[in-house]
Image (cartoon, rainbow, N blue to C red; front, side, top):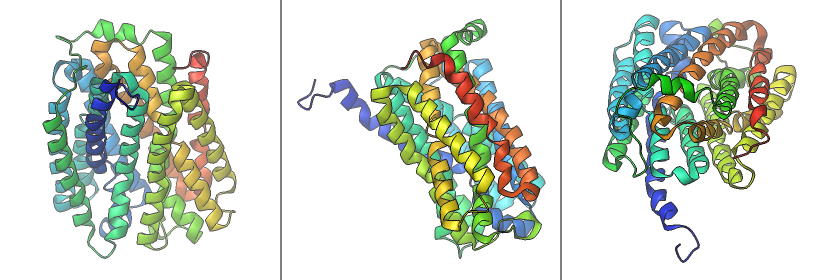
Length: 406
């Protein structure tokens, strides 16, 4: 113990955890970089809201294929997570920059966004494995910080767009590539933690047996319900903001109102989830990850239902406040599903278990994003009703763990 009453090992792990969290923030800025340029793409390519959903879906498809490959080949557990993370961050930066500088329409744009998604499969799940390798004794808190940085990274392109409203959209997207290169350098220098476990070969039967464990199944089912809602909500945030502020969509179903104002509000609504992730991690020390995840799911479901029912009827300030509350609750549960699944998985298969769980979860997001972006032009804010089954079913899946908090 140190003089402050904190175990020396925990204090020693804080700097690596902070480094990994910062790298996650910088690396995941690639994820929604195209969404920050939605208004510009509407003008340049004639893209509609559903077309922007297609670009987001392309990233998700790439991420799904990448995580499946990592999981089914055992790649995530056979090689150093820090090297995989760094290599994928460099490649993702290159593909993201190519989207900004070389894409000339939806076809080429979607192909490059798909490639970015492939690379993100080596950033997000491997970042979680790095955390477990450095600080397994406080996985819930550390993963909350990590997912908080993922959330902030998701929001970051909107902040860049708001700050550079007078600039062309291409430099804003290239800025995310520069941030991803910095993430690669940070993680490559840090390396893997002392608790990292590697598997000598693929153990497909062991991976299948791992998911038969009731605790892992319950955590995974809760996560899948959460994912139905999360990324569709993040994709729709700029459209929701425009509708509740301006009262109507712009041309071709695109968001109306000032692009800078829409980007600024979108950043705040998504970024507030970073603070709620950190707060949830602190709360989990007392009440456990199950209780925090359940509370977040319940809060998110309530916000979703309220916004679906009254979003466009509320005064703009009230509607934006409700979106902020939704942004805070929609992601606060995410790190706890990862912590619960990591705790229930065999140590030598943590990387593969998290990768396959992520892969299935992101496959679910493709369906919810496609459905919601296709219907938002007709349904307006009531499209949020389509997202509500996610947190409700997530709570049902998590029920098996209520009696055994972690």
